[in-house]
Image (tube, rainbow, N blue to C red; front, side, top):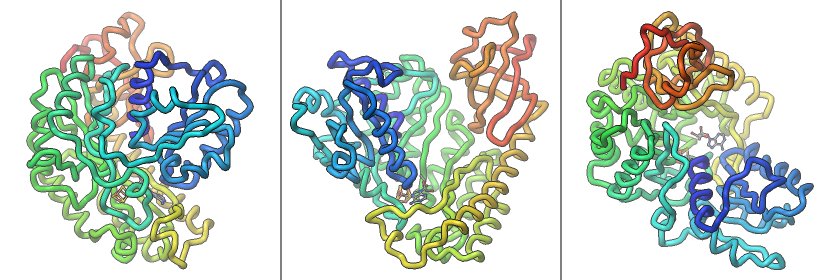
Length: 428
Ligand code: 5AD
Ligand code: SF4
């Protein structure tokens, strides 16, 4: 979502004559769009600000969730910051910058009644795969998480507004839309929720692929599970965080579901869509996590089998209930558990990817690859693929298309493939 927000900040500043540059040295304005989810991300802001202090000239703004959570503290710790703006007020950036008087620093971390979405211009710089925020904030209050405080209460954008933005994106060349929200399956901008929205977007001409992220197990409705079975443009991939496989820890996390609830949802999803690729988030070393609890997470992973996963050491966040618990897990234990967990997940991912070697798979080629003669894209199952394009073929003919590619090799987090000339087509 920060990537989406950064783009929208660039869009609104473009109306005031700003354009993007890749070097801070050349910039009139540098905005750090920040993340507060774990301590490491939040601390990075200050090292980056330290680096910017050595550059003479640019106005420095701190946006995002560190701005929201720390407000004045950002300016106290880093006097070179001119402006602090939260995730719900960045539509005011042009006005804030115009009012900026360098002797008086500015902070705007309101949760305004008006929504930024009505104030932002239509998106610019649209790629083959585009993000679209449909929901923001969260009312779940997991004990470890800052999101309900930094992004605020759950807010769903009206459905008409979303359809309008989706049509605009597709018109501009997007073939895939990734629906974004901190708790996206809690979307309630229409009576049928996310499932209804997906079915409506499925009928947008020219939109080939729909994805959504990120979800909470308790909002995995019957209708949404059915959409996975029936809506062909809804890609067979789901990121559904479980965080832990121990009921005791799930309860302390205030997740309001058990491991069995989670596994039942997975079972129903797989019955609806047998080839569904699953991804999850895991936290190791949550306060109170014993070796036994951790083993339960490991065995849940073994039972479910994940195609992708993100895993983190618990990071105590100021103001969250879990940070106040007295039975914090020592850092060395967290490190050790994380490495065991990642080894298991890495093996599962590699095994999953190996199933594709020697086969053809459709890839939406959405960007130029890092190496010469290479494009990159994703399979329906969200695997990243690096695709070699033979010299005899023109790269540009393939960019933005869904093309069957031949998979040559599998790595834990990507596939290597090539286009076989006689087999290549422009099938959608
Ligand atoms: N410590 C570690 N990981 C966290 N996450 C959220 N809060 C914390 C925290 N305090 C992880 C969760 C969430 C993902 C976005 O970040 O796994 O799903
Ligand atoms: Fe944070 Fe997700 Fe829990 Fe909301 S559901 S509090 S965003 S971890």
